[in-house]
Image (cartoon, rainbow, N blue to C red):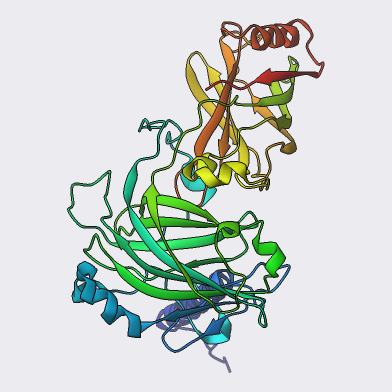
Length: 431
């Protein structure tokens, strides 16, 4: 007696295959969802400021922060009672002009996040913005007036700066009659105490009346410090414009009486370009490797860099024997072949120094059709990194077979005639 075998129909097989594909698709989607959530959480953690930022909040006031190595507190307070008296003087701005600052602040854990403002990363300066497009005059030009007051509390070791108002602010780059100004202030030379006001919309005569209290400052320290004010116009669609800045040494303000307020009025000036100083020197080493067709450049150090032009904004600062005006230098290197830039490198920024030590090595791979460094040159630029405005070029240097500078031309000839040998030379930077 024959037994019929049990067979599987084609419809059943198709159903099994489709079910397996569906399970596989759902598994892939679940894995992608988990990865997306993990990346979003990681990005959120990177945006969250460190936990050691210490803040103090008063009413509607916002916060300030201290350096990671030493906690310092800043309080901000808006003195609304005095705004009415200032408005009566005829210098009040429009009521609808007030708005929140471009930075978004969070009160959880005393942290803060900064949004659009005039603080830029180094990577944003990769374009050809090193060339200064505006020639500045030798004498400071007034771009308005800033009114502020200062007092010191001996019991709390606290310095309070009250930004009162600005008058007759002028924009140099836009045709708008009014601006959206806010004020950033910091204590030099340490730059560890910083604060900023809110933005006031559509006014050339903003009234702030905002107090900023900096804690942990000994009275003897104040004699060697300078208040730096930067008046900035907020731009929602582009970089904020620096309207002007000013310096006020604390040694010129009478802070000897505890909680006694001293009011001052200072003219706002544009930044000045120092032309009387040298550009400094840089020590670098070059080596050509014909076997691998590579050029190695080692940026060792620089010396004699000019002090920052911020010192020229106030005559009183010229007599201060303190380290105000230090630069934040870094170097850019461009490999040029047949007149075109084909590669770019840059060093790290060295903070608050006029004699930076880099000790950084860079290797350039030359094109295959280049032999013996023919048609090759090296361009170097030393820049001063600045968070308030674009980075300023301190000095330039070009190394190649046809450059005008004799030292640079001889250095290049030496590495061509002595391959595989590191040759170091000092070079003066040019404007």
